[in-house]
Image (cartoon, rainbow, N blue to C red; front, side, top):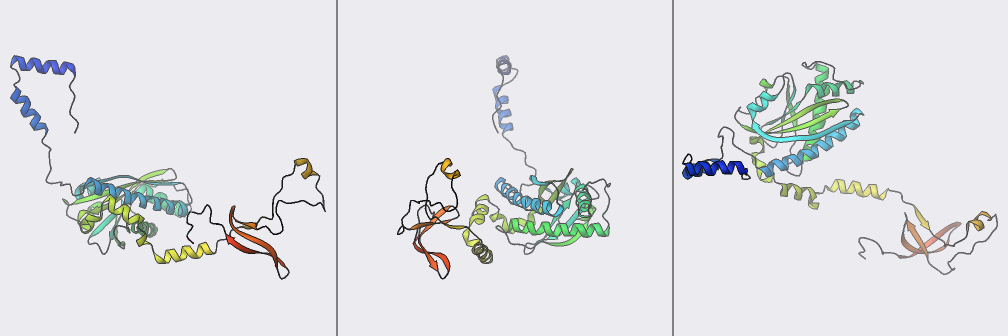
Length: 335
């Protein structure tokens, strides 16, 4: 903590008090020692370090981007999803902060033990449901418990959101989220003792003109086995590691590249003429190029020369024969 800077008038008053004996030097020294003491609440121990909180923030930024893409495509409207905050609280404080009713989903995350909670604000839930049913996505409905049909729609939303949640965590821990129960009253969602510490990821969501929050509650007991992996260094290293590449994805990407069509052009030659000469060209005119019959012609792939060739025929068709490869300008020129 930065030292407090006294003004000149405060310094004069302090010196005056010391000289008059009103305040002794020992009292000033004791006051300074008292300021160095940091209050610690044993009822709310800090379970997560700043680096771990930062890593959780980065993980859920990835989740927010994936969820934003899904909602924008699925709802066909303007959607904004971003992480608002990541903080640690007791579970009781989290439950007391939730509105009643809320759309609360209790999820298992095997192989990790315990449950996590995904809570969606009713305004966002009704805006999502209204948009799915063909409406404009306006939350004009007063907060209430969902009907069976509305609950089914929200279960599909949670299932898809959990797929993206799993993808954003895969570099740290490969778990498989599974919906176990849904509740509307926060008091009925006691997944851990009230005094246990949890990390709360608050995500700001906007669907059209409707704004709301989505909270993800992850108890410390769930994350305890993988706490050593919740570091920025580990997460970044796992994200860029080539060893984690999925062979199936690599093969699929290779097949797509092989099927990609690119323009291939053989340049017979060039010449420079004036606009006046160009305008007077007619059928049967002969243009003399700057190449000779025995010269190699460049083969352009896209707009870049990649080969040298000689012109000829293959049966009744015009063709070229590749004579050599041009490696100049390539990033990798391994023979």
